Length: 147
Image (cartoon, rainbow, N blue to C red; front, side):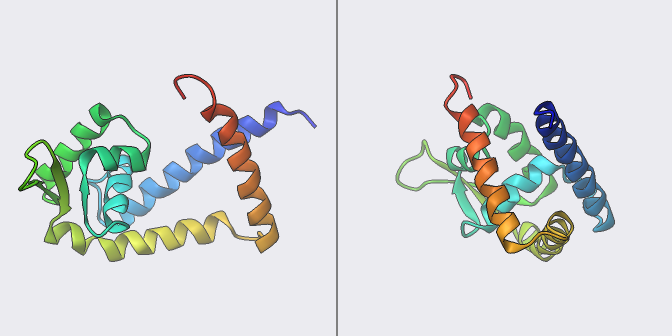
């Protein structure tokens, strides 16, 4: 087996999954949202609808400087709001708006479709092994400087 194919297929699968996700967003009339916006909204959905901006950046694995324009676009679209902490004015919370909350059923449907497509034909044991191996691969890069 040629080890180079492993990285090739990981990269190729990632591209296909992103295309799949973009197509599903379009099918659900969510053309104004890109995948990076989806990561932010999902972080909010999974954490009570309210997070500090630095916490969002950490959860989605991006720098705050990268997250800021994404947040600003979601603000412009009306999916989120900014709220300043009452006791510490340095802290700004990002909160789902009513419009943002209304997207959740669509996100849930898309997530289900992604999981069903991705894991089709996998046994429980295969998924567990695959996850373990991907975590191991990820750790190899996590330990590098600037990773």
